[in-house]
Amino acid sequence: MAARHNLDEIRAAVRAKGLRATPSRLAVLELLRASDAPMSHGDVADRLANQAWDRATIYRNLTDLAEVGLARRTDVGDHVWRFEATSGEHEATAHPHFVCTECGSVECLPEIELAVRRAKAPRSVKQRQVEVQVRGLCDACN
Ligand SMILES: [Zn+2]
Ligand SMILES: [Zn+2]
Image 1: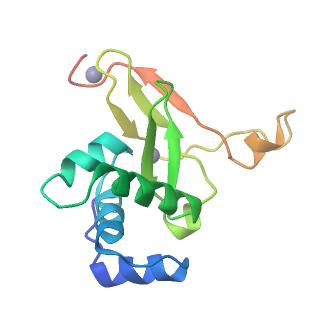
Image 2: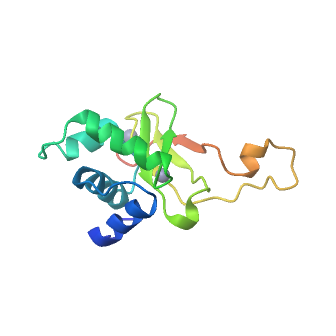
């Protein structure tokens, strides 16, 4: 989660997906990989505010990364797209997100196995192309 990924690895991952390894794109992906919670466009732009890139560039980088599968977009129900880095083998799996009903903070939770193999469930659920949400109070609000 908070493991330190070096820039060469990030550059290689971006190029392997056919994207140009621009400094802003590398910085955005590095930030997502270092974060243990999904980040909104505003979060990312604020964290990179000391750089010269405008918010539109950062937004385009986020959507580019999501399109090629290096990041995934998640909506925890407040209609704000949040972005998080995917790791190769977990690309298609959805892990649940904890959302605090008091302060709105969002955390990633470990993957859970959905027991839907034999159950009647839409294909998207069986393929884990769904959002799983857990709602409650975070430690700070509890
Ligand atoms: Zn809270
Ligand atoms: Zn997550």
